[in-house]
Image (cartoon, rainbow, N blue to C red; front, side, top):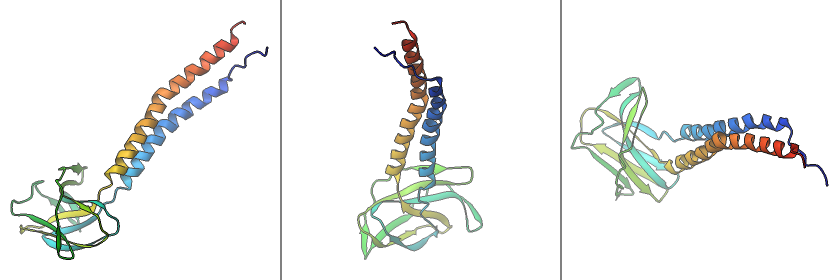
Length: 185
């Protein structure tokens, strides 16, 4: 009967690597996906914008209530005036909005609130008109990539769990195998 081979202590070098790849890899994937989120087209309103949609999907209209745009800093209320109308059309047909989730995002320099959500099933040219107020406000229109962000968050969570829990289990397993193979037969 052959003696059992015990794993070398060199296997322990893989433990920090497993931790770094788990933690760093998951976090890097999530940061990369956040950085790739489409900014959309930003514009001043009241106005009528012509927007070309190249990929069907869910599109959002954001009210950028705190933003620096074209050299001017805008700091408006997150709430739009009551008479505000937001209308999206394609070839003269009005596109009905979906119920907005009321999402918002902010940083030190900017803040925006979702004010419209549309499921666009066709590529093409759309007309977005935002009217009903006199003071200029800044808006943006762009594709929602929430599903990609959600998937990146799940991958990040799994890799982080591997980093945090897989590494100690891996180290314990090496020591258990070493102690078993060193035990007298």
